[in-house]
Length: 388
Ligand SMILES: [Zn+2]
Ligand SMILES: [Zn+2]
Image (cartoon, rainbow, N blue to C red; front, side, top):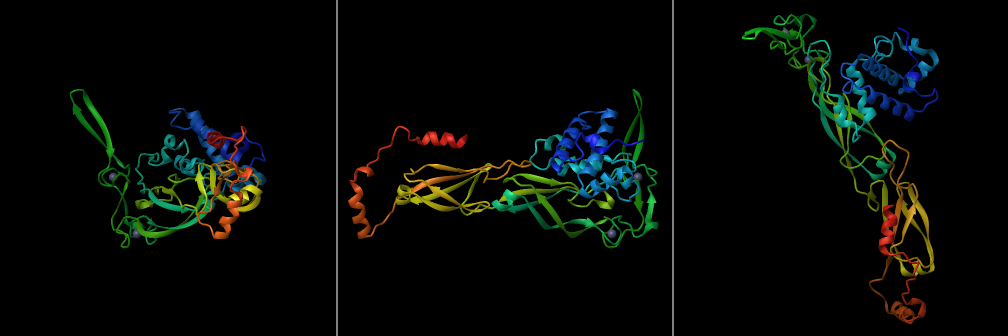
């Protein structure tokens, strides 16, 4: 079968950037997802085709090779991830979804994380359990996205037996109970006639093979306790309580099964001076009434470092200055929130005699009499402005 062009499959231009490719694939994956198209072979083929195209075009190295050599580029690579040979299997496809749909996406429930699927062919493959970790991020890390290398204590494949659980090759034996099928059929006579039921083979637990002598290190499990350093790419804009999942990075499964997922729970480390409010960042600035009266310029912290802002003469307390795009980006978007600088007028709490005398001279000065004009915005108007 001659293959269609990967760019055509996803409906993107040759020069499409990573974001466009991801978006296009997302659309296809939703449209042709098997859960929505049960029994529709054409949809399944489209689903697989799109996954394969995405697998290649989302990987800069593979994409470059594909651009240069076309489909022939990886046809014979041993571990092409399905690029070439017989296409990707469903498990591979679902394992991509951790990256595509990430945590906190509206699709999470719909795709169920892609886990727990049985591989086709009857034999049961054991699945490793999911692993949960917490990652604490500063506001700066949240704003810029972060790459975290985290040492995770988990079940890893046993090196001695290569994860098989067997002492050596000769220790494997086809299960005598099920003949390697992993399932047993039972025929029972009922008043309605003969009924046939199929159930998982009790001898081999559905694996199809039994092990005569077990590996002495893992005692036949194929997994041992160990450590793995995992690089986690956290997209910008995540927030407290959000969960990301990385498919296949959880606990390894016994005897070469499918590993579980790594679930990453996001925690925010509170910033010293900046408060996050959705994608906006709020900063409380205090200026004394002299500065507010005659004007000044002050430095305020932002996620990107210090920024100088001007305080106009005659600035009233409660004014909100908006620093455009100095907030936190939205997840999977380039749009950033703003930083809102809330101006508080600082009134001295204690005065020296000299200070007091100076102020007493001003106390009854005509310009010091409060005289809010009709154009002065009310507190509620300012709040309204803020929430818009
Ligand atoms: Zn069996
Ligand atoms: Zn072992």
